Amino acid sequence: MSRRPSDGSVIVIGAGIIGIACAHYLARAGRQVTVLDQGTIAGACSHGNCGHIIPSHVLPLNTPAALKTGILSLFNPAAPFRVKPQLRPSFNYWMMQFARRCTRGHMLQSAAHLKSILDSSFKEFEKLFGEGALDCDWRKSGLLYAFKSKRSFDEFAKTDTMLTRHFGVTAARIEGDALAVFDPALKPDLAGGFFYEQDALTRPDQLASAWVRQIREDGVEFVEHCEVQTLEKESGKIKNVTTSKGVYSADGIVLAAGAFSGAFAKELECSIPILPGKGYSLTVPRPEQCPRTSVIMPERNVAITPFSNGLRFGSMMEFVGFDDSIPKARMRQLKESGMAFLCAPPADGDKEEWFGWRPMTWDSLPIIGRAPKLKNVLIATGHGMLGLMLAPATGRLIAEMLEDRPRHIPDAPFSPARFNNKLI
Ligand SMILES: Cc1cc2nc3c(=O)[nH]c(=O)nc-3n(C[C@H](O)[C@H](O)[C@H](O)COP(=O)(O)OP(=O)(O)OC[C@H]3O[C@@H](n4cnc5c(N)ncnc54)[C@H](O)[C@@H]3O)c2cc1C
Image (cartoon, helix red, strand yellow):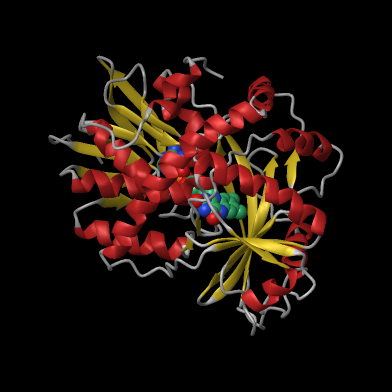
């Protein structure tokens, strides 16, 4: 099959939440958009994630503590944050770049950039949901950090103070006994928690389906099971996109291939340093007593999301390559870690076991911007742990870039040019 370009047409490679958001904003800008995916729509990392839309989450993965955790994990295969040593030079280069940025200075700098795009994205989500058509369990029910030990609770208080002082992110501190009153679904023996009232949740697979339904009505075309194989260049542009379903062409190309985006680095003559950061989720029927908010339990590195028709446990960050196994031990660990905080077990019924490869950059910032050496290519990837949250602001930025309009937030921190075109 061969498609001719028409004025303003755009091909988006990847129908994850980032590709969907790009398609939405491009279609609203009057572009004719075709989204190609090698699998199914939102069938990869955007399917079973935790669904947290939490602008309070400004801290990057690169923190001084992450370095210590990463090193210790080399000796503990059950650690939630795990690095499996590899011989590939690009893997080790990535790890070195990541480790270099595990300083307080870098952490605060990245957090400032994340804060700007998180706030923008949250406003865009509110506009989207304000329009009323997306049916996807969206709830502004807040986010609770819960702690078992007084020591961890007091330790987190320092992070909370830092978040307030540097970024204006505030939480309500809830002491032990009051926590059980705040949410009777939580065990009564907890030391306390911090509640970020401004945060929200959604069911990610339902959001993707509802959003796709909406933008199909705006004329966006989706082609599933269509693997992009090669990108053919002419006069500093991508002219043809060869796929398993034929050749496509368009005026503009947006690369939104998540953890797979790095495979296009050579053809785009631009560094896209992404590693897959594997995480898992387990979704079970709602227990009789279900938490009313999303909960993160930093001591166990596990998160809980209460959907209207289920309860999801999510966690782990494994740098183990594109490994697609779901070890039983990881599922057990997820459930046990979560249940250590909950009064009631899940109800009987079907469960869903899932993994996803997060597209991780070494500086914890997404890559959003023009491919430096090709005139008609934009890159939208590398959203790591925040892809769902950052999708709308990313889509809006991509449309602004393609249209050469002023950006609604500073975009330089996210530019692909920050990697100095060093191909890894
Ligand atoms: C356990 C877990 C919990 C998480 N929780 C949250 C959360 O609460 N909030 C949040 O904001 N984020 C969360 N995330 C992160 C979030 O899921 C990701 O950042 C986001 O889904 C990335 O979206 P994407 O569109 O970039 O990638 P993907 O969803 O992976 O989409 C990329 C698409 O590109 C396609 N593709 C790749 N190569 C090709 C090719 N050659 N040709 C055609 N198509 C191609 C793939 O098939 C895929 O569909 C979580 C992740 C995990 C693993």
